[in-house]
Length: 232
Image (cartoon, rainbow, N blue to C red; front, side):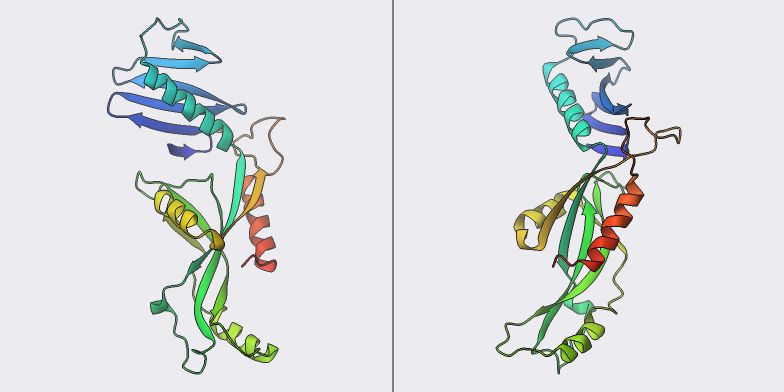
């Protein structure tokens, strides 16, 4: 599924069909368009042409209607919902130098990010990416047999957690990052969902039934909260 914005979703079936989901007043309407230009619309349980005529039996292949209904369901479930995850990722050792005096204590550094699993970004390519927002860096320690005092921990934190030059925002392909999540459940925590309001195509909001909180406000809130309340 290709997400162009919060209100428009596309899917292609070969070179013959384009499926489209349009979010209008909180409801997703599905359209299937042939390469010839003929458009069909799902309205409730009915399938109509763009002129409103009921579709004749066999006029639209069953597999096209099945895919279109699936697209509608996915868009309806995802629209207006910030699905918040926090994830920890190891910083490449080539970018972090552990001092010899600290190497017996500090094993490595991880960056912790927050992201919305429903938000897919296209960075000048068709492959969708997640947009990760940096929260903080944290040390990974060797298994130690002695306790480290607070002054030493603060010294290590100032050296390794505050000055890594980590980018504020990173982008990771959805397909590969979903595999990372599946393979590293101990480094991922789903926080939960927040209802959010998107601006409509004309710049207005979605009406009186739309959530009162917009996307950027939710993003700012979760970033501020989890920078002060560490998950990992």
